[in-house]
Length: 370
Image (tube, rainbow, N blue to C red):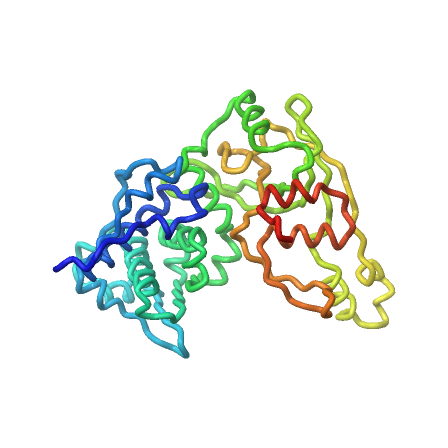
């Protein structure tokens, strides 16, 4: 096919170099394949130049589908939305008629080829319709089927706004997808390993300092494992907004604030209670923040992406790519606002009158315009 030009990947990965890792490489190979079908060469060299976790092509490959399969991906259109459903092995057999595609990673590779083709269509302005992918119980049951698909969508803002992945409700209840992705990304980055206490102290001093507002999560470990390694996943059973007070020896001191619910949401909950029982819940009518002081032991404390297999707590920055919808009282009345996680935390702390270093917070999370 005659070449119609060249593209560089650089513009597609701006601002994500701190999280880009081998978990996402397969998607870009699929995207390159879809551009190739159109006679366009997508230069992926920039992929290996911006990330400290992905410095060269890895040995792990994705099965790139022939042109006829990529062109004929069976996406249905329903009320302006492109849809793909994989409920049983029959659905996969209907889409993959050649047995060589039915290996143990067939679903994962297939979804990545779908995502690469869809992303190409978006970038080429061949479609502007959103994509919804629904997986049944079988394919929802293990993250190995969809974690690369999901993590890539979450990584790239220009793609996340268009793509939705639906898993079965039963799986959503039983699997902590966010924690699985976090651990797999850490594994891909090479930061999922055992650490000496000296290493932990050094990492803490490099990435945290007194006055920072961060998240402290409690991890409950249960007996299930990430695919192909022996790291227990567990689930997150508690999240705190904390201000770091300092490090003494191997102990992190912090101040925690229980203000994850806005005053508007608290008041809404109050008025949903029967009037004859509202007097029992006056704290919801006029909520106040409670402040507690606590400590975390560095021996079992993960620090951002640096985590050991059995760490029971995770201290990390709020993710600026996480989008939150929350109700707040504004000058224009009650509004549901769409905010990044750091923006939401800033508004909550401000609403409850928490004392914190606003300049440091805005600089840390690049919110200078707030």
